[in-house]
Image (cartoon, rainbow, N blue to C red; front, side, top):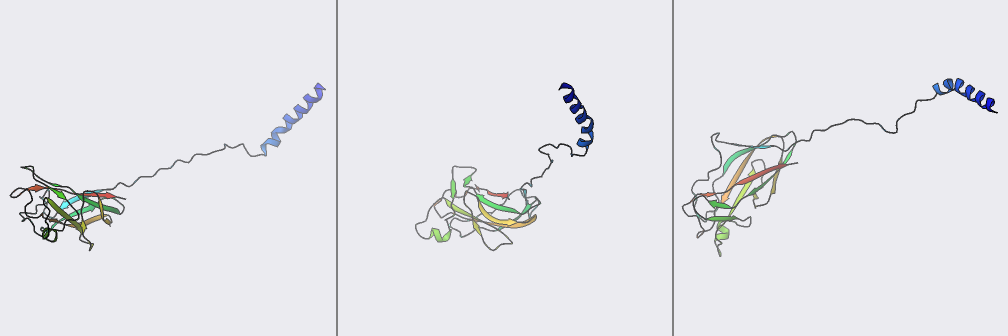
Length: 182
């Protein structure tokens, strides 16, 4: 019996080369393909109409005035994709005293000051010159507009607080904060 098994094994091994060479090679159960993607990064820069400017100066404005002067500057979408531009403002503070105004997006200047005037509240507006709607800012981001890559001119306004507010004769400091996102 042992010789018969040895003979069968010898025949299978001898002929197996020819039988196995016609069959496909065994493959792995998975394969790997390397890939990559570069994520676009939001990018926003500011440039002023006056190249030597480092900020906006609204000049001297009276309490209770309806709106301050407009100032122009450009925001540039330096990304390769369209971006959504949001904006918010900050409270105003004096650099020489404890005077402060609270930014209030429900404050409407002379209209608000005519009946039971609040004190130490003010407002900021912003809009892109390519859009018709003005955005009244609060201390949290509000969508201004989506812009394509390139520059967009901005217009901003300060609405002064009612008479009786703190800060008479002082310089009050505040910020417009713009954020780009996808």
